[in-house]
Image (cartoon, rainbow over all chains, first blue to last red; front, side, top):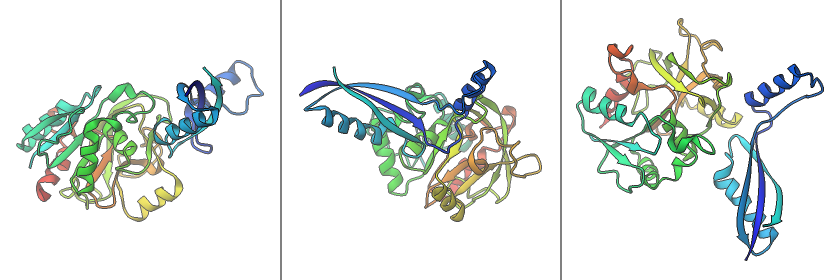
Length: 85
Length: 228
């Protein structure tokens, strides 16, 4: 077993109303960033875990997302990185 | 009939719920500690309002894994009545006792105010004494109350009449202006397939006597007496 650091992005499911993202986009427009089309506000989690290899570390975090870290009704997740810790 | 009210770390309406049952229903009510595995013989379980586990990760996401929740889910599966109020509704959804999820209010505001509800379903153990179409006034106090479900689930809930309460205006109409949080179809409360588990964002336990501004919450508790 080796230590890995796995990063996950959890974002509101596409198509669902994202009032936080909209509020941030509006603020960016006010600041003059007219080219901003959309903003989505989610969570970024960094999980330090032990696994046989990087693939196993990712698989384990995917299971964590399915069971706790992301709400299957309203959120999507993507593994942003798996690096040796 | 004995009522158990679960105390999670961060629950803040648990004592109110106990008082509502003990004082206004004249039935025994006990607090159930979240770390216990014992419902203490309760026939009805209340998941109260508050901010269990500080709403970390998502409202209700961590409370769902409290030891007592295994007992609560087993009780619900046996057909035992469970009501989730506010944070309790969020917990019931996270635990899979009710479909859907409660998201950040569309207006991004924490809303603390009385709301008007229309009773849509009187075939649940918590609304049996209510009149269909009756309008009830109760307070809300939440930042994450926007009921959301995927289109298939929403269609199923509507098709099976499982929406229990909707936010309405003074004329009893479902309007955007009457919707305090952007909930889909103005949904304030839903039930499971058997009408034994109900979740709602408004607080019936805070509307038990005119002194509190409304006694309209009583009917939910009185409905229990009809079945139990």
